[in-house]
Length: 334
Image (tube, rainbow, N blue to C red; front, side, top):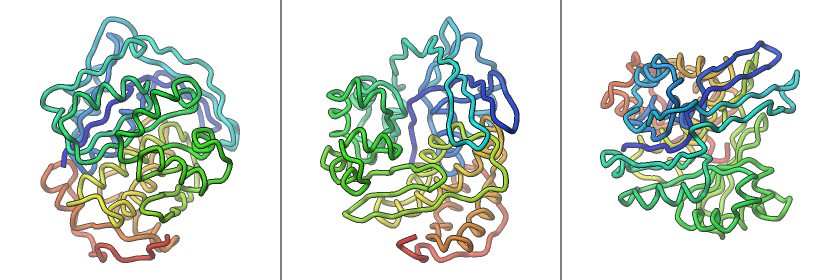
């Protein structure tokens, strides 16, 4: 199944204890598609300025991403700068320069309007609604949001929630949207707003999937060294949606596998600045990390035959033969 993401392609300037980068490739749609393209044909709709480096577009194209929906207009590309504390317990935004992104009005090419799965990244709820009006009956729609929209555009946000299947947000945003500080109560109230699948991201504490009256908690991958967590949430969503695009249907088993896939790819993202580590992650590296994670955390096995079939079909990433793993075994509560 094909997958469309609508969001930002940007340049980030980031400082962490591990170092510093300036004008590094970033943006929600970039991190998302770098992850999702490992599994499924991925199309991006975004806008960049005339300062955007052709080499960065080539990096995305080389990953197998369809960049034909990325529009280049006069002006400068969206830029964000941030500094993390020594142990990544907090992050300070140094600057946000929307530039050409401030006038972003997504135009979905006809070739993208029939995408099976759609992800609405963190953009204005009115733009998210406009994207949905341009689509032709997608099978599954997921979205992201943030506290700024929850506080300032609540009515429009609630309108979007009625039209999507899944919502991604962190625990603070879930409390803000629901008006309660209890995670289970927050999940119930948000699902009553529309989306029947809810993914709450909790950083180093992993993530929780709420679906069909059940809660599935997946721990984060423990890393020897974290370099830069910027984009980890978008990467998680990209892995999640990419895995779903490999499945014949979106059911409880597929959603569980998607949670593990998103978790694993987010861990790659954190190992270097920008999308550098994620870009290096091929299917062989992914499967190796899956085996280690499964052994350490007792987590759900993925539908590896479906993943291999998708890779062979798209030609995005070749991999050597890997020991077979049961398609949907493992601990359903992991």
